[in-house]
Length: 271
Ligand code: DGL
Image (cartoon, rainbow, N blue to C red):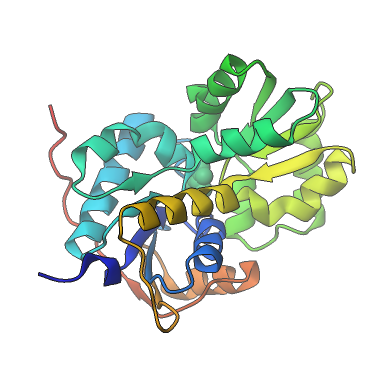
């Protein structure tokens, strides 16, 4: 029976966006081995039907399980919105999403309770952030920003094009003191969004808060890797490996060996 604590943690996203969560996990849990899957052949998820994204999330989770992961971090807001909590009920290992940690972080940071949420079409339409924030007494403004993901995947997050697109999406915003980056690709646009929103608006990304929750839970469950050395990071990519690594390098990694993966046929949906 393998020692579960030494098994890798699985992390996935539609593309490079989840690397922001991967980097936070590496900082928080330096001894942990991490197996990242970027579904770049099917990015973006944000404008696809949610039941399709749910099937992608199940298919990827089963691939990661086949490779022996001890837990799975859904490092994608759209996939978290589409598949949780059902995915967690279905899988035999712990599963974490990025939405609850992002909501908690925004409520802590906001002074006025006027909170904006930027995300994919799917995440904003599902109201996974807005409903939770409003139940806690906040006033929300949700905005779908579908052009942001291809800009980040293209490696041009800090460009004139990115600035124009940010201004376009933010032009009709009400007064806000906090904006949630409700897509794991968007932290790559932090400099652009800061310029567009001005110095008085706090930006919240759920990478650090998600990593903190995962670390707390792994320790509590006795599943955290204890070292002695640093864990290894490996990448699986459904699309072109070279262009994935090119963008991952621009975003600052974390890098590691990367290989192409063919995902198996869909598992049948649980009834
Ligand atoms: N990074 C993902 C998210 O957090 C998905 C973006 C996309 O593929 O549209 O929503």
